[in-house]
Length: 232
Image (cartoon, rainbow, N blue to C red; front, side):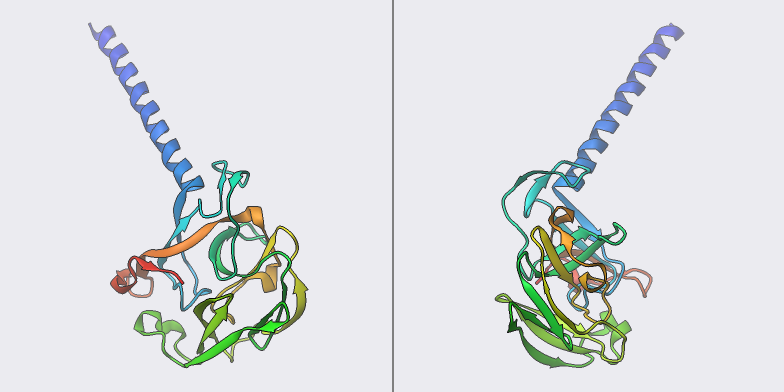
């Protein structure tokens, strides 16, 4: 009797473990190939994305990859100028979120934080200083906000004139199969100015919305006004 009970118990445990492993495999495969969220630890994309935002990433925006790899199974689109994307850094493999500024074949230059694409200057509108709000107050001193018009898309970018940064570079041509990435917080972003172009296969998906936002400086209090906000 005890022997049969132990056998049934072992069979039940094996079945439970097998079901759990299958569920974990399905869940992690979904995150790897279909959709995930990215916890933003830095302010390199301010004011669009701030520290503590949980950003939803659509991994089917451009293609379908083999789970747990960067191998493409099928593709139907490519990143466009102005898209916010999540990708693996060519410098150290860390996951980053930045804005696509240059696509393959583009000629890009920058002078004093003003971009030129294919010899045409982008349009900028000065918005003022110190307008980030209390939820983003850690950099409310000495910064300037602008609207940047990029390929028919407009978004807010930030500069910090007193902070050392690469604000100008001469013309570079984006190679085939690569992209040039920059943070919206132009003077406080480690991006393509520092680590170079990003290979297409290293782009994991498009960031489309802030799902949840927690204030890291105030005991992880929810920033309710940022919940479920669309990224531009």
